[in-house]
Length: 205
View 1: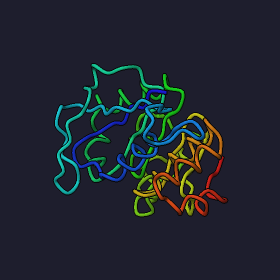
View 2: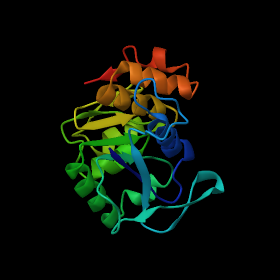
View 3: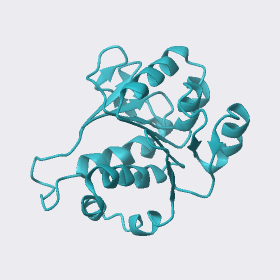
View 4: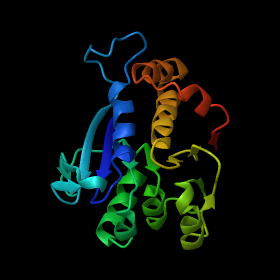
């Protein structure tokens, strides 16, 4: 499965590196991490070649918006940059088009605001960072905003709360596509002990 991760200036680093590491570490059950048999092919996509993340980290994107491989699973992260990008018509149109063509579209943190602006969350349950819940509610009243959950599975759209919750969301996607044993193996490889408690009662559908 081809995972396209969107990047933009002032993106929160863990919002995209958390899911990136989950999908990178996912292997068929019993296959060691050192064996090159990944379940996902991951790449980054941005409007410009160099992305300046929150905190000053610079990342070189793999592809541009108008030149990237097909995307089966879209990851839209958040960060302070969403306050600007929510009014970026080109980016919002790209998110809407790619998400509707993908098998799954996911958001982390305020990436949900970009998904909502693209019309992808209309009439759907979704979540975001706790500090941006009211922003999502007021700006997009058609979204069924969920609180107190790490992620929300609404079928073709899966959203998560802020920052580290993106790891839980990505592990949930691995579990949904490849089963709980593969998800548990992936969490163990990452030494992410929180997964077992996060998955109990955290997903809404």
